[in-house]
Length: 398
View 1 (cartoon, rainbow, N blue to C red):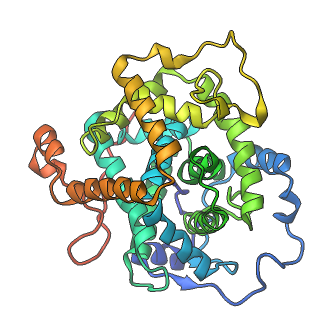
View 2: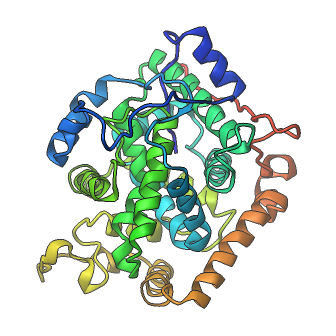
View 3: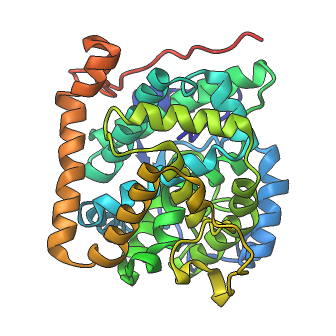
């Protein structure tokens, strides 16, 4: 998913040099963000005011243009625990992020940029784009943030640099630059459903929620989101309020009224990633996503109704609109994560399956080789020497 940034034309040469080299700098010592004097962010503790600020002011600002440095409120131990939870809950976190990738396609401004870059509109381009996204996300979870020469920092720099180019190019072509609003809404795609939906799979680990929230607050900062717009606040309690209001007032209505372009892009996404996992299905994954966003008519279990709201018996259930195979995938998948995922042996099995898929995608993507050819099937984000692998964008000229 695109964490895009602004063109960078006003940045100093030092900032450009930092982006190009991938070398990061630790910020100067300062007061802890939790105890700082009153700032603009302190006035946005109210989620209603946060959302208003994000949608109005955030739609006018691009990348923060900050150097790639750790923020003063960074907590290394909490960040490392966030990384650790990825291996413990790999299966459901991957599923949550896939739903997030689909959900952001319902945001018109993000969809315009994705359409402009022409990297996600066919099964082939979507396969390569989203496999890159997966590999970059894995680099953030699996590498040492304390080692400035690690692939964590190389990946962060490469993503921010690539998004800067695409944002600048799309702005020139009338698709608009990627704004702070788009960055924060994309950030939701990576963290929103797995945290806000944790209770659905009986995952009540408060440390998981706190650590994951902090990790993505740090990642959002490094990827160009200003603290005042960051969807992850200074604690899980603050993050939960922001995530909840964004889900209810942005994603729920957006997914309730999706466009034809949304379906076309989602179809390309799922058909592309099908070459990694042949259990993926367009209609089933759209159902999963809309259910997580609490869209009416996409309930499955009785507890899918938010805040104890009782379902209208006249409400149409879209589950029955799907074919038998999609209904099987939905029923099987929801039973697995709702009732069996809490058992360690089941988690181990599901996590192993995801790990195996990732290994095969990297070393032997046999389905993609069969469909796209040997050379095109292999996706790399790093060169043999460890440098970032840049990729070309096929931008529209219209």
